Image 1 (cartoon, one colour):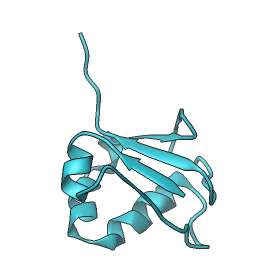
Image 2 (cartoon, helix red, strand yellow; image 1 turned 90 degrees about the vertical axis):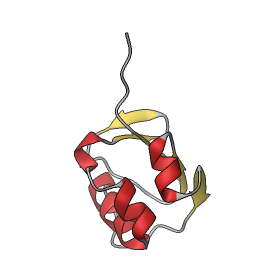
Image 3 (cartoon, one colour; image 1 turned 30 degrees about the vertical axis):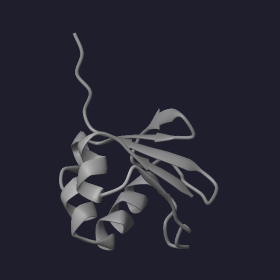
Image 4 (tube, helix red, strand yellow; image 1 turned 135 degrees about the vertical axis):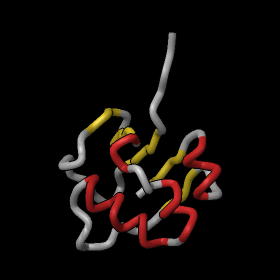
Length: 83
């Protein structure tokens, strides 16, 4: 799975992206975020307020129950403001 992190998520995690093998027990975005949270303090800090993080799977914004699978591209974004 290709994971990409943007803005302050990138800063807290310490990289802009990575390739990871998806564990067998991870089947949804919610489960993916919970698993990433276990990978270390940078991930924990970045994912502390999961409700504010937007997730795109294969270039489409999705909700917490959206399925994920090996080979997907998942991007995590902080809240975006504009004007």
